[in-house]
Amino acid sequence: MTDGAPVSGLDHVLIGVRDLEGARRAYQALGFVCTPRGRHIGWGTANYCIMFARDYIELLGIVDASQFTNNLDVFLARREGLMGVAFASADAEASRTAFRARGLAAEAPHALARDLELPEGTVQPCFRLVHPDAEATPALPAFVCEHLTPELMRRPEWLDHPNSARGILAVTTVVDDPPALAPAYARTFGEGAVTLTDAVLTLHLGHAAFTFANADDFDLLFDGVGADAASAPPYIAALTVAVDDIARAAAVLDRAGIAAEAAGGQSLIVAPERAAGVVLEFRAERLDRP
Image (cartoon, rainbow, N blue to C red; front, side, top):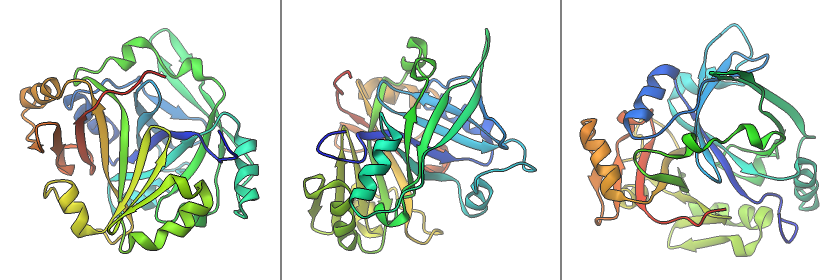
């Protein structure tokens, strides 16, 4: 974190899914490598993660509905898809202090761990989480994540994706009135982190962008692969992933029989029906290594 900012960027996005094994297969067909399954200790939820050098995608599902699900059941009763983001922090307590310095409430850090089922035996990645008040990130469910065991989270074979994916570029949320959110995001992250282009609001944090657009602008941004007409805003609708080789990504999709809209030769857009409720964009863009 720099200049008193409460977070350093994006850590991961969460995709709530009704069929965890089916979602794993769907994302493998899209050309991603999934980690072994993780099971949250004391909870009824489990996940598969798609790891990149700086961030990752978490596919999150319920494996025991009799246990605590952290409201995942409530979300899945409405829809599948992107349900929240985790911001990155090297120090969860410092993040809480930074939020409070901006006049924003934030819960004290609390611990979370999960069993990660590796072939050689189960290990336990551990985290500290901070949940700021909703007014810190309006229309975007978010928390802060500090990794206590980062060495357990990434292996070289988990980072080598057949579609050449290298990281998350953007998260796009559909809202009714994007400009109305600008003051809140400027307060939380600083004026310099926020840009407003016509009616599209963008928050820039580290290497990732968080875009807020109304339904009409969303359709324009994603070449007519429309927002979810059955969901009332706000909801997180789209994920943009950087790939080193767009032709390689296209070949993977073609082999899997997955149709994708080509946008300007540098982008492929997959409909939410093939990506667990997510409008998924592959964009040809090189990411600097961390």
